[in-house]
Length: 478
Image 1 (cartoon, rainbow, N blue to C red):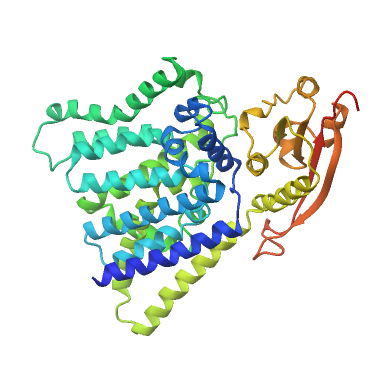
Image 2: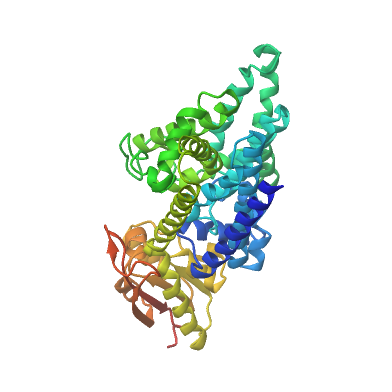
């Protein structure tokens, strides 16, 4: 009863914090988050998005309902998913009979890479929820159910394919199962259930039996390094962003100790497998791996439980210390971890563009012109105008070709552009639109500051300089 009360209090505090974060940071930290929202919102208009490879079928289906209400509702839905995952993680710690099980909740939320997307519209929290449910089912020896749930991971993120392979190995060589591995082998076909469901749904919606292959993103090559390749230690040096700098000691202790306990070996194996997988992908630049620490938010429940295991061991070693001192030390670690998480979030300077974009949209609302089509450089711009994302051009980075495409757009086309992502990702700057025959309606320079870091700290945070533009294609009679 005491643990349930503590867990409830932790969840309540995290919920309040999440609502505040959603209010303070109205956009995603990555363009991906904005695109995922747009896919979910417009899937009812373009049903193929429900089965799109990049749109992610499970995410798009779940979010297609709150997305109809709006972007804030979708972000709060992510918070609900994250809270549910935290609750399931605590329950799993209880299943494993770990001491201080409610601490898994702050250990879960205080992972910087999870904290920064706990109210975002990214796919990692959905993956984490499915994973922890599958882990609990497997622990309770509901093997068939756990495999069916695991098969859904491929519908949330590409790593689901590899995790399903790991699950198959667990099932085949589970010492608790009296059957021979040959008798268990047919049951592992359940791990393909999610992929089969995806294929059938794609066939029914699109009529193309090879839709998944044809829809495969060009930025996810099986070979090649479209986003570059990293070192073998890329994620080792980014462990503070994954686990949290003050929680690394208990995490490493927990990883070492829990890996020797049979009932917890699955948790540590899952993390180590995931870590090795992404290390290989990043080292060779496979499947469009960009080396983001946020990938590990997908396995945040396992990280929280491993951290708790190490924390309990260190707590047992310090039992001789004064209780007040131990309580103070625990409080300081959690508070400092919270400050670091907020600073990590606040220092992601590109998220501040949302404020500038909102001000530009407000100006246009007061100086409206009829809009036949919207062209934009950031997903949040499309969200603010609530326009179909398919209105945008597919920019090729061939300047002459893109300028020709812009000239062919209808009169009344509005261009919402800025000086950072537009030139870098699409290869076009403000002068190019004027050359293509568009008139400048409004432009403004912004100096965007965070809430916590007024100046750059070790190259992180500090003011962000941004310029935004609104261009318009006038009628031929003007």
